[in-house]
Length: 133
Image (tube, rainbow, N blue to C red):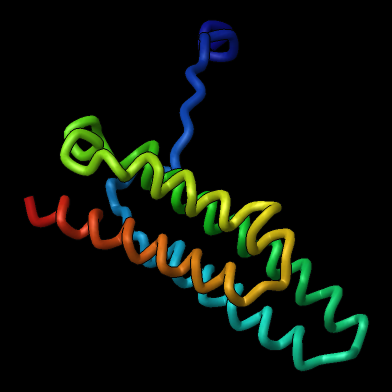
């Protein structure tokens, strides 16, 4: 009994509680679409409480976009993918920056949201090509 209490543990991390192998860039896209919609709603609303709440949610969604992209980048894409698609590192970097403080997280710029969606679409195109292989 004491052995079980003091046995060494191993810490692991995954995008869910069990590394399931299920990945899809649609998760990042849905969050980015939400960001774009929130930006439009904030532009059309003068209520300071609504705007504060919406901006907080937009910032949370931006963090989720980054999370979902990083999961694809670190857990799904493998060295053969990066060899075949050398632009992939740059695409993920640019997309996560567009979701960050100088992008949708820190600004209310619908153009940044459109740029983010376009980058996610480029990543998704590569993702689905790798799934065919």
